[in-house]
Amino acid sequence: MTKPLVISGYALCWNERACIHDDQGRFYEQFLPGAFVDSIKKRNQTVRYSHLSSLDFASAEAGQLTLFEDEKGLSFRIELENNHENRLLYNLVRDGQLSHVSVGFKNAEYKETKRGSKKFRLIQRVDLVEISIVENPAYKTSSVRVGCNNRLLELISKIDKALSG
Image (cartoon, rainbow, N blue to C red; front, side, top):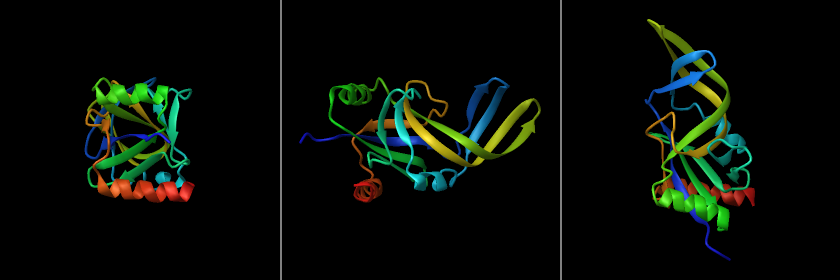
């Protein structure tokens, strides 16, 4: 049995505002702590490359993805099967060519305010669908690295894996 490839980091950090562009224009978005708690419990999220649904690498349901809200933000640990495709992703992260993460979500509950012509969304709760390893994230403080040095996340991952097995 080959050793799994582990990557971890933060999908986003609290108190960071991102500039989002959609079909209705531009607005600023920020997540509040607790926004993902209910969704994480469902364990139905996947890991993708650049939000492409055809490239799912891991899932929470299978115990390969562990998500946890801590004081800094939405942290994650991914345990990839050691195969050719996953080694390519792992090596891109290791070499720093991919160093960020983005989140895909739906059903956002938020408060919207305006300051002049600028719109701001303070997101209180969402259904998290996926996290994606990306080159250009909306949230610039997101991060991904090889390995995991977060002891609490490691413990939660072991519990998740035991529950999914």
